[in-house]
Amino acid sequence: MKEFKHFINGEFAASASERTFENRCPVDNSLIGMVHEAGQAEVNAAVAAAQAALDGPWGKMSQAERIKLLDRVAARINERFDEFLKAECLDTGKPEKIASHIDIPRGAANFKAFSETLANHPTEAFKLDTPDGKSALNYGHRTPKGVIAVVSPWNLPLLLMTWKVGPALACGNTVVVKPSEETPATATLLGEVMNECGVPAGVYNVVHGFGPESAGAYLTEHKDVDAITFTGETRTGEIIMRAASVGLRNISLECGGKNPSLVFADCDMDKAIEGTMRSAFVNCGQVCLGTERVYVERPIFDAFVNRLKHGVESLKLGRPEDPEVDFGPLVSLEHRDKVVSYYKLAAEEGANVVIGGGIPDMGPELNDGAWIEPTIWTGLPDDARVVNEEIFGPCCHIRPFDTEEEAIALANDTRYGLSATIWTENSARASRVAEQMEVGLVWVNSWFLRDLRTAFGGAKESGIGREGGIHSLEFYTETKNICIKL
Ligand code: NAD
Ligand code: 6OD
Image (cartoon, protein in one colour):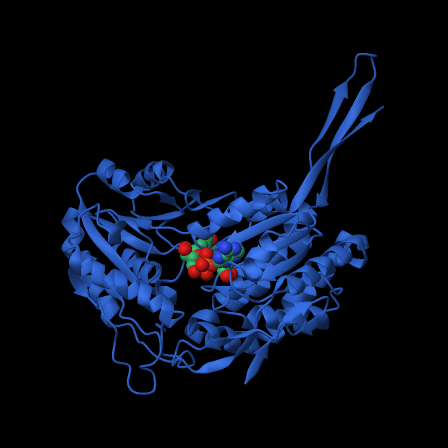
């Protein structure tokens, strides 16, 4: 049986308390291994190691040397691709077909993209005329923020963790990562890679555990953590924001969503169906950018609902390693309880269940896993909880609309503001509608098409701040103005 230890100062370490918890595979609920739970002592040690690396070898290294090391990390993840893939799929149950295209390649790419941004992005410079008839030169100078706490979720574990660790390290910071308790494996494996690549001890640290009264809280409340970057639920984001207020530490929050998709009658239906199949059901609906509310212009409503239903019928559920499989289980039995409670609520709120709505019979080998049926509803009122609360499962509600104005109002009628997707072949309409969406990200005729140079983040209760490209540099560095009187 596997044992997942913390990674502190370049070494794998057990918890002094010897407290551990189970890591189970959601495919069949089998035990993968035991995870050490960090107490205050382990978190203190990890933060101290990160601080020492900052004051020592990492802080003294040139930007070019750091970038070379991070390029090596990216290459090494790709060399150990299959190990990362197996570990990620065991922890999450997601199909290898998906993780080999999304999670692991992006996990590696995150270590390269930001080095290039850093190397190529200048800071500002202004020459100022001074009252004595001479002048002064102002220029911006970036320094690392310091020790960064990275608190990450379970849905895209390696991708979302390295999305923060990559730019943080490129900018010269050190990190202490608290991966989700559901998915400890790839963050731990990355510790081995850091050592193999010669990244100095203390630059990358991992502490395992839960949120409240555990590693997550101890880390985010730690006074020597200089900034916190978090991905997860909005309610957790609020708690972390309170923790960050002590000492006025910087935060970046990437939180939940209840994302709309607007399908206009002038769309290319094939593209809209293919895109909505992915945005609603890929990764078993556990993507923060995923679509849970679909608004379809009335003339094509019935045809759209029918074709999406056929798409769902063709999804193949099964084990991650089966190359034909495109749909795995939810991440855990606990999360399935939550999603099932929404399936029941949808029925109580008067939904018409187009397809799904329950737990599939996967046979004796898999029935203990966290399996769930992909589900489509129609007919719910706009104030139904199912239409307003983030479910984070493979389900969507489809509702007809009659005018562009109505579609925009419906899409924006939410406290969330992460992403929106628009399906239309009319480019004037596309930009007009996109500009009115109250979100951080809009995709037109596509979904989850990512360019790491662009701004990523949410509006309203979906988050605070932007990361990606220059925005990551802004968050992970302190810009100092240096004024030289000439
Ligand atoms: P979560 O908020 O429950 O947990 C996220 C992380 O925070 C975990 O590591 C957890 O242990 C830790 N945590 C929990 N309570 C804490 C506390 N009090 N103090 C410190 N740390 C704490 O989220 P989840 O269930 O892991 O992930 C699903 C959620 O994440 C969904 O709401 C989804 O929309 C959101 N999400 C958002 C994005 C985005 O980019 N906006 C991306 C992925 C997931
Ligand atoms: O692609 C990314 O950079 C990113 N942060 C994706 C988030 C997906 C949410 O589940």
